[in-house]
Structure formats: structure tokens, C-alpha cells
Length: 213
Image 1 (cartoon, rainbow, N blue to C red):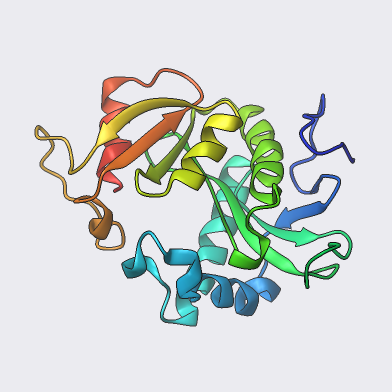
Image 2 (cartoon, helix red, strand yellow):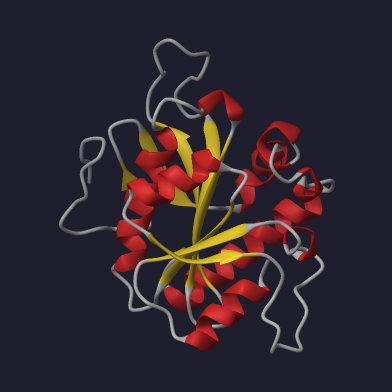
């Protein structure tokens, strides 16, 4: 199934999403080394250097969590690859340029997100991937949520461009909540964060998303 850049199809096959320039397929064990290279690149963590991956086991865990999400809820993470050489760049067909996500969180919402290599920034690929992944996520019954740092305006613009709505802006965790964020997300709680969603969220669900950091 193929559609032009910016278009959203009437139906989706989530195991294979294609756009004019991209091919998205479920993250697999064979992608681990390339995923690790992306997430270990400090250039992909300019707005949160503490998030940079330092061990390949982190990429292995991403794949494991994705496979569990696909099995449990029909969606997970996708490897984003180029369908053809990209004119004007050094990017060639088959290059893994990033990862997109619509995993199911324990709180019952989709965690929408993406991370692309710096070499693929600035030419609309993030919006192209995000548009089709959001359409796939909205075909399921769960709310779709996305978290971004206020200091990362490029990501914020993509979330706004594809139609998600800002539902919370702030830092820290809910004052009434005794739970702390996981160590993996603790570095973000002191920073100003934005939460987007495709619909209004119940207060308890929003609080659970804020806790994630």
C-alpha cells in the first residue's frame, strides 16, 4: 500500500506502512545494531544528552518491548527505512533512518514517538513517518499520546503539524502522586515537558503519562 507524502490512506496494514519515500516495518532482532547506532549517537540526543544509549542491550530491550506490544495490542515500534536513494543526500535505499513508535503503555494509552538520524532531518521525513504511524495508531481504540521537551521545538512542530493537541505543559510529577518516574525517565522530570494527545484524557490517565517523564 502506497500513498503520497502528506496523504493518509483509507485503510492501513500496520505491519507494512509505506509512503512516497519510506518503508516502515515492525522492529526486529536484525535491526538491533543499526538501532543502537542511532540511539548511541549524541546528535540524536541534543535536547537530552542523558538519554543517550550506552549499551547495545538497550536496543535489544527496545526490540523485545516492541515485539511484546505487537503481540498484545497489534502495534509496537517500526524500523523506518528509505525506499530509494534520496537525491541531494548521502542516504541510499534501505538505510535505516530511525524508529517510530505506537507501543501500548501499562496505563492504557499509545505512546507515540519517533527518533530519526540527524542526516535525515530537515527534509520532511519525520512528518512523513509520523503521519502514517499516527493514522495506524488511531485505527486502534486506545488514546494516542506523545511527550516532547519544550526545548525541542522541531519535534513539537511535527506533533502539531500532524494534528495532535497539547493537553499539558509543565515539569515534575503530579503533587498528589506518590509514585516516582522510572530511572530511565527521571532525567526529564525537571525539564519543561509537553504532552500531546489525539483526544481529551481523563485526569488519572494524564497523571500517569506525566509520571513517565
